[in-house]
Structure formats: structure tokens, C-alpha cells
Length: 180
Image 1 (cartoon, rainbow, N blue to C red):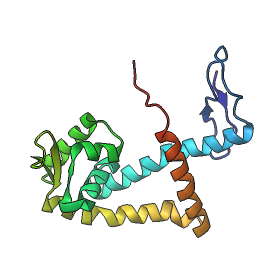
Image 2 (image 1 turned 120 degrees about the horizontal axis):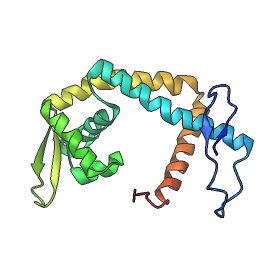
Image 3 (image 1 turned 60 degrees about the vertical axis):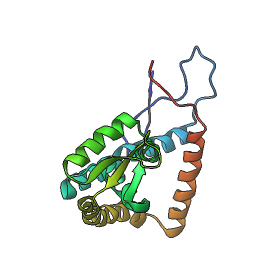
Image 4 (image 1 turned 90 degrees about the horizontal axis):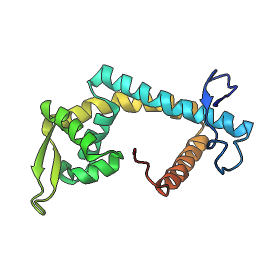
């Protein structure tokens, strides 16, 4: 049974420390670690929602779509293989393909066969797509500045970067979960 975590910022947030009791498992998380995890889990829920809301309201994009456009805008010749773009976005080719289709319908992206290897498809940012990135990025960055960097000292921001890179590195060594 999940255990309620007492956390003023997250009342009623449920925590699931470890595996089922009949399985061999590490020691349960300490109360301090549960409190920290509750804060991280809440951040992981609230920040993407806030970023999506701002981008939808101001630019008609999801955070995921903005990330695709931004990655293409930053790439050489504003083009990337879709398989590489999916890896950057940490998503399946299927999810990326659906997003690319939405962006294509707006005229912001087009697909081309990779001239260097016809087995691959490229996502190519159009001039209108570049204009969309130029339009949507300032508001997005202002929200990131306000929600993340304005709430931290410079030292805390550097620590956040270090901590995020360490957790990301640990995640990359974990086996990928696939539904059965």
C-alpha cells in the first residue's frame, strides 16, 4: 500500500518506496528521502505542465513540438535524421512521426529522403518553421528564467545542472522498460 508523504508543498502526494514486500528489495526510503522525492516528483509534474500551457497559449505549440522545432533550428542546414531527432527527444519514432505530421500541416517542417543514405528520412525546418521558433522562443525562455533561474542563486543553478546531469547519466544506464 502506498504511503502518504507529509509535505507542506505536496499534501497527500503518494510515494511508492521500493517493490512489493514479498520480493527481495533494498531498504525503504528514509523519511528525508521520501520528502525530497515528493518534491522532485511534484516538480516533474508541474514544470512540463507550466511550459506546455505557456507555449500553447502564446504560440500554439506543445513543449514537445517546440523542442522539435528548436532542435531542427539548431542543426546544420536545419535538418536532422528523424531517428536522431527521436533520440534527442527521447521518444519513439511513432510519436515523433505524429508530431512531425502536425508540424508539416502548419508548414513548419517537411520530410525529405536523406540523399546520403536513402534508408533514412530527414526532418527539415522550413523558413516558416524558423520564424515560428524565433517567435516562440523568447516567451518560453522568459518562463524558464522566471520559474527556474530567478528562484535560485547562481550557485544553486550550477548545482541543479550538476545534479540533473548525474541523474540523467544514471537513467541512461538503466534498462529500458517496455510494456508486456
